[in-house]
Structures are given as C-alpha cells and as structure tokens.
Amino acid sequence: MQKFPVALLWFLASLTMVTGAAAAQWSSLKGSYAVTPKNYLDPSDEEPKDTHFRIQLTGQSAKSLFQSMKVTEAPDQCTGALSRRVGEMTCLFYKQDKRYECHFSIDVMNQRIEYGVAC
Image 1: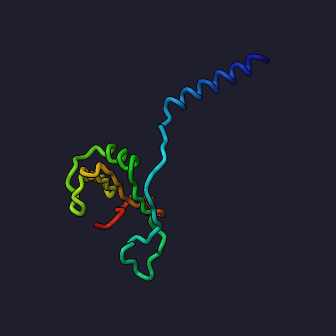
Image 2: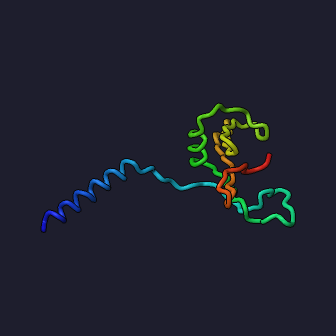
Image 3: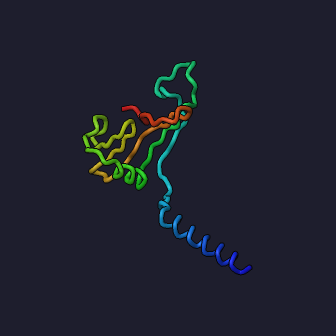
C-alpha cells in the first residue's frame, strides 16, 4: 500500500520539474486597448462596431516584443522612430526617449492579426 503514495509523489515531483523547466516567465503588460470596427477611423453606419481588438503595448512588454522580431529595422515613415514590422504587427523604438511601442489588432472572429493604428 505504501508503494502507491510514493509512486504518486515521485510522479508529481517529476511533473513539477518538467513543467517548471519548460514554463515561460509571465509578466504583466503595460499599454491600452480598444474594441473597434475594422475601419476605426471612418466606419460606415452598417459596419459592426466590435470586430477588432486593438492593442498598443508600451514599456517592457513592447521592448520584449520589439526584440523578439528578428527582422531588419527601418525608419518609420510616420514617427521617425526605428520600426520593426512582421506582417501587420509593428513595433517602434524612439531612440532619443529610449521608449518602445507596439501596435496591432486582432480580427476577433477570423483570428487574424491586422494593423493597429493608422499613420
């Protein structure tokens, strides 16, 4: 009868070690969001008003995302900041201010990443 509890404890300890080693470090986000229509700057009256979840990250979360984008930086035409872009997701680094921002939206029903903010 004692073999079962010992085996169970060994299994749980092994599971904890495996999941602990493979687990990511989760951190809080800094930024803002809005639920908007697809064409948030000039929506038509017929357009649904809640199709896109727009996200603007700032601070460490934006810096981490910027650094994870393994693409060449280019000057952003709207802001002059250094820009990294993957698909429709854009992250900016404002060199003088040492500040990071990222912008994108999620098309909720189609589960697609789209542009975040207009120029």
